[in-house]
Image (tube, rainbow, N blue to C red; front, side):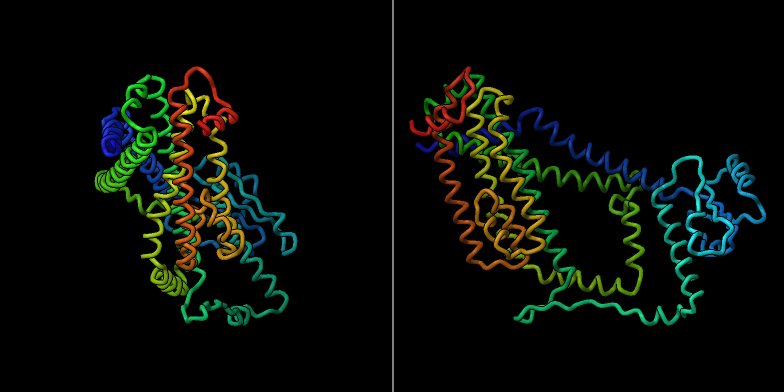
Length: 437
């Protein structure tokens, strides 16, 4: 009789009814939202802080380039020595003092610029000051050499190379960024899912083995059915937990925005602020159009279908290895000697995906690793957005499925012997003997 559905049901219900599983399912999103809210609140406080910066320009060349902004006010100091200015400002509510020495030599003036403050200043503030000063001094130097700045501005040429395939399909640099983003997200999601729920399967096997419950279960169930039931049941529990997390994160985000007035989607970091400023120029509309075109050009149907099959295949492949490791040892401490060979292919797949696929998605290295079953779930998912022939995807998937069946067969042999072995940490040599039984 096929007991697999019963085992899957038992594993699923055992996991979802577990107190720690229930607690972490609901507490984890709360902790995550709390951390994001705290970061958003602190960022909001930082961005809304009013700063007064004093400018003491003894050269008279730079002070006029500083214009007040919403949260930054520049105060010009006139006919005051540096010593008196430092003494005076140290007792007032000033963010800092920018000092420019008395020199007209543009080649040495940069050596006479200093910023004085009570505490270490913000890197973002210093960068903005440096950019303003650099632009002003560059313009002055060009003017002194007789260069017309208006001619320089009018002579600048912006070049954007249009990209098009031989079949007439247009693309752009934005397309490649979107493709890489999708592939990276898919590969990273698979990587994290394997690590989190693969370990859950391994711990489940170890717990049943050490509690001797497995001796009763194995008397009426085939080892391979028991192993597959654990893998599928735990996977379904993981998917359930994942969807609850997504739902709770969405609900909690809305609640936080309504109650505390903090929009988590609009958290501004210095880097995001610089990007937003760059997007305010005339090229913003062109970039937006390229983003829309890039999304349209993505083979969404192919990506979704491939993601589902490669995600399931990759997860089942690695889950069977985790189950075999759990059956071979008595406690989690002993699993360390077997974990490295399992983790290394995943790390290698992520490395190849991020550092090779982005440069040459159809090169020999990317292509070869997209067919190796232990790396193909990640590498192939990152290659597909760049356009991979269907036959290559099907071949890679068939190799992945075939390897999964082979690994399950080997893992079941280890599982069959290992679940009844106690008190001894097996070596690789002994595992090879178990395969012959």
